[in-house]
Amino acid sequence: MRPIMLLSALLLALFGFSGSARAQAEEQALVDRATLTLQEIMGPADNTGDARALLRNAKGVLICPRVFRAGFFIGGEFGECVLAARGGGGSWSSPAFYSLVGGSFGLQAGLQDAQVISLIMTERGLNAVLDSQFKFGAEAGLAFATLGRSIQGATTAAVGADIVTIGRSRGLFAGITLDGAVLSANSSAMRAYFGREASARQVVVAMELHNPGSDPLRGALMRLGAPASGGGNSAAPAPSGGTTSGSAAPGRVQTENLAPPPANRR
Image 1 (cartoon, helix red, strand yellow):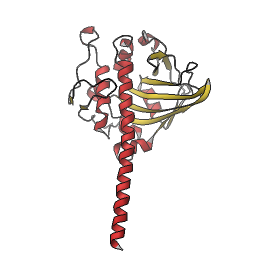
Image 2: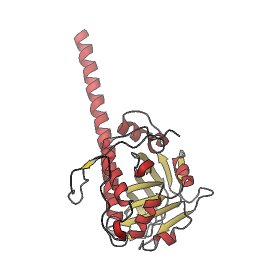
Image 3: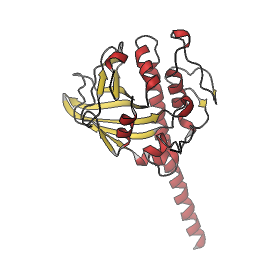
Image 4: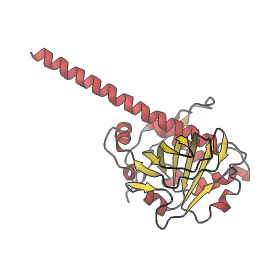
């Protein structure tokens, strides 16, 4: 009888570990897609200088690699997103996980999905997003800005905004509004990714948790949000405190090894 009980316990532990590893792999895939989205929207030198200027001053960034719209003009929308916040010394936090659900996002007729980045420019905006549920366009006291087909002049268009949204669909910058969409923290995704219960505030503000799998995303934020050297469009230097594996192939995430984000004791 005892061998059967031991075998049962071993099988349960094995299946539990397999399920946990599978869940973590799913969250890592989302983080990797967010990294590619950031690089694709902010990376090209043409038409993104002003957006990078906003990123340099942003308190946080919400990245939704794919916001999917089912229907035409009227329908349901859904997206999985990650949120990172700027820490001390130019570092960035590991990502917290969010789900985005809403009615109409105001996508143009015929567009089915989009990459979306929301730059959070103020502490007030970041604290609002960190609340249990956040509704775009409906938070009292917050100013929102949306950048359309061209993001040139973004710094002017976004003056005074707490949150600035940039969207791109099929390689083109598109006029996208998230008004009415509800953003909710995904606690099960954070538990799978970090191996323990965690709130979004613990991850992005207190920076108590870190997964090295997020280092490519953190490194991309540090590079793309760094001041351009010599006033030109040259690439920013690699972040300090870690190593990179060289240039990544198109569509793949570059491997990086950075120092963990500094814990915030506030």
